[in-house]
Structures are given as structure tokens and as C-alpha cells.
Length: 592
Image (cartoon, rainbow, N blue to C red; front, side, top):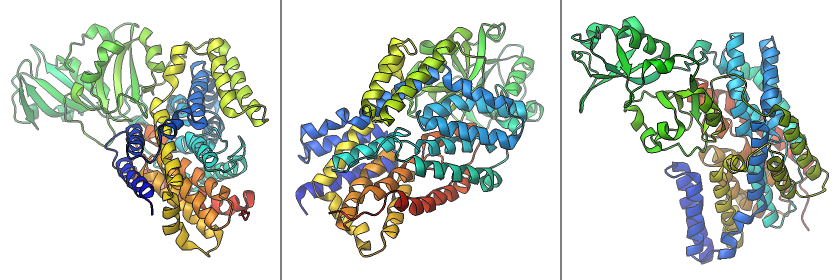
């Protein structure tokens, strides 16, 4: 074992530990690993920066822009509005899954879910259906659609690029389609039958009232003349009368936890928890004022100039890990955060000091003319259904035509996908489907940096011999076994690692190992690369395994175990289909 291999394995082990711990964001971990490889002399500067010029990195960035073009022009939303016309619950669920799966085959699935999420919530509310029966299927179907084409997910493109770097032929645009469609059909049938029984049936009123997606935390100041003055919190019986629970009393610099015996005074601030309508009712009847560390006067609730909206902290949002104070939210967005809802956790801090997490739902009061900018903000997902947005509807067909041209030109082999995608991005800007600033904002730069950082790690694993060492000590120990058994193990390894760390990181780790193992067995690496691709792109078992799962976790009022009950059997179903169909489509051809 050479020093380069030892150093590469050490860097990889450190990166895996950081990926799993989630102490640092995945893009930072990727750059740290890349820097370590350069400083240790494992790779040169040319290899180190090759990830930024890689075909996969550029294509993923372009696909973000193309997806934004469809989203901004309202092309995707027009499809989703058809849901409201479906009368039967089973047909509604089927339509949701078929639509999102089809769209996600060509559009970034996170963007697709962000568009369809408020539409599905509004449709379930109108039909008096439980959203918890439809949001997990929405997320899962988006992932299923993503494995139907090469451009469906960034992981597909990453594996394709790594395969080419390792001397393999790579994949065509529709090479995954047969297996992807088979898995999607089987997955939808499962969700319509067995999954339907496993999915929770929680009351729609818990999460789909227009401005009440659950329990909120807010601060109420006791004003002069309030009937509560002179009473203790226990004597006021706020829980019995309003279903509002006082968590903390703030009096000047003093903070009192569980203040049941405290006698209320003018100026006291109550950290209270409850549904928004009951909090508002309490405020009006007891002469209290909402006091999230700033004034909010009653006239702001009146008239048509203000609107209450629900927004969710999006996956890979720069807001995650920041507080409202650090973001200076009101100044930058001209909006007031009234309350925060975090699934499964009671917030104990003052609102402006709460560190935001992905999936947190903020109740915001904003001027109506500011709502379009909130909807365009890539850091937020507006989940409250609203009036039709001010899209340039006449440009929606144009955006669809541009996307279709990108797919057709690449599918027919007229030009590489990276070139057709870049031309499509330029066309969207030239035709005013997107403004240049919107195109830049649409790109998830954390994903781009992650890909650019991990691609050289994959090259280092192969060139240093570390991949051969890992392969011989893992899959290599299965030498002499049926290749189907080895394929099943590779698929399971990718499946487990994708639940523990970033999908891209799992793919980068396993692709060189799979290639080395296949070559050592004298077989084509292609079947094993397909297994890694499908396993890394479909994480159903946990709410944190894939971004779309995280998006529906809080909004759907799910528990962690809901994903395990529904997702683990689905992952196993995909595993069985994969080990049966992969050798049929990509045979274990002996290598020369």
C-alpha cells in the first residue's frame, strides 16, 4: 500500500465522518477534503480544480436554471392546477404521483416538489382529505421520476461523469428509462395499495387551515388595561379558555420558566404556544400585543395591503443555521415573522434568537406587493396556497418548448447534454422567461461546490490505488460468488450509505470501488454503476435521506417512523427489481 493510497483513505475517512456527523455543511466538507488532497500532494492543482469544469457540475447548474424557467413562467403550476378537478381520492393520489414523476424525470425534483407542495395542500383542504396520505407519495414519486433519465438527478450525472473519468463509456440520456419506469410503476402500485395502508391518516385541520399548519410560538406583551393584570398565569386559565400554553414569562431581563404562579404585570412578555387563530383571539380579548421584539400594530392586519403567508426554510437554504436577528429578516424582506412552527420540537427561545433549520415553517406578515419576491426567493418555499402568481403566462409555452428542445437535441445525439442545456439557459434569458439575476439565484451553489469538491476525491481513490484496496477488502472477498449476489451487495451498500450521508458523497465513494471490483472479476462495471446510481438517488427510509423528504416532513406532520414504515419496504422493492432487471438490461459482459 503506497503513501498516496494511505493518505487518500485517511482523507476519505475524515470526510465520511464529517458527512455523517452533519457538523459542517456538505459543500464545506467537500472543499476541506479537496484541500487536504492538494496539501498532502495526492492530487495536483489541475485535478483539484477539474471538478469545477466537469461536465456533470456544469450540467447540474444548467438544469437548475432550466427548472427555474419552468417554475417562474408558471408552466409547472398549470399542470398542478388540474388536481383540483379530480373528484375521487384514489384518482387524485394517482394523478399527483404520475405528474410529479413525469416532471421530475426532466426537472430538478426539489424545484418540482416546491411547486406542487402548496397545490397539493390546497387540493386536500378543498376535498377534506388528509394531506399525510399524499405528501410522502409526492416526495417518493419525485425521486422515482428522477431515475428515469440521466438528467433526473445530480447523482445520475455525477456517476456518469465519474464513470467516464475512470475509462468507462458512460450513459445516454434515456439509458435508465426502462429500469426507471419499471421501478416507478411498481412504486406507485405499492403506494396505492400497501403504502396506502401504512401511511398515517392525520386530521387535515392540523396542517391545512389557511394560516394554521400546526402549533405556533409567539410573544405577547401585557398592555395597560389588560384583564390579566393582577392574576397569576394559573388563575387566568388560558389553556382552558383559549388552548394557549404559556411556556415562559419575560420581565425585563428576568426569564421565568413554567410561570404558573407568577402574577402578571404591565409590560410582561408571555412566550405562548397555540394555534394562530386562538393566539389572535387571546390577543384581542385580553388586550395583549404581539411582541416578537418589535412593534406590530393592529392596523397591519386590516385592509388588503397586508397578507399572512406560510413559508418554509428550503433545502440547502442559506437561512439554515442562522437566526432572524442575524438575517435581519424584517429589514431585508420587509416582512414580519410572527411565529415559528417546528415539527416535534417546542421552541424555548425568543423568536429572533431561534436558529432556523431546514423544514421550519414561518408565519409571515408581509405587504402583498412583496409576496412575489418571497416566492422567487430560493431560500424559502411558500407553502400557503395563494392567488395566481403574476407569471408571464404567455411565456410558459416558450419555456416548455426550450426544455423540450434541450431534451430532444441531446436524446437524438445532436449534441452533448451539457451543450444543449447551456444553450437552453441562454434561450430562457434571451426570451425573458428568466432575468439574468433569477438565473444566477436559481443555481444551488452548495450542490455545485459539493460536486466540484467530491469529483477529485473519486479520481484520487482510483489513481492512488485506494479503490482497489477497498474493493479487495470488501466486495473482493466475495470472489467466486454469482455476480448477481455481488450486485445485490453493491446496491445495499449504496442504499445504506445514502441514508447516512450525502447522496453524492456515497456515489463518489462507491463508484471507484464498484469499478475496481468489477474489473477484478473480469466483468463490465456498467451493471454495478447502475446499481449505485439507483440506490443513491432513491432514499425513502428517513426524512433526512433526501431533500424532498425533508420538505414534506414538517408540513405533513409526519413522524420519523412514518418514513421508515413506508420507505423501507419500498427501498427493498426497488432492490429486488434492480437485481432482477439490471443484469437483463446490462448483462455481466466479460471484459477483454
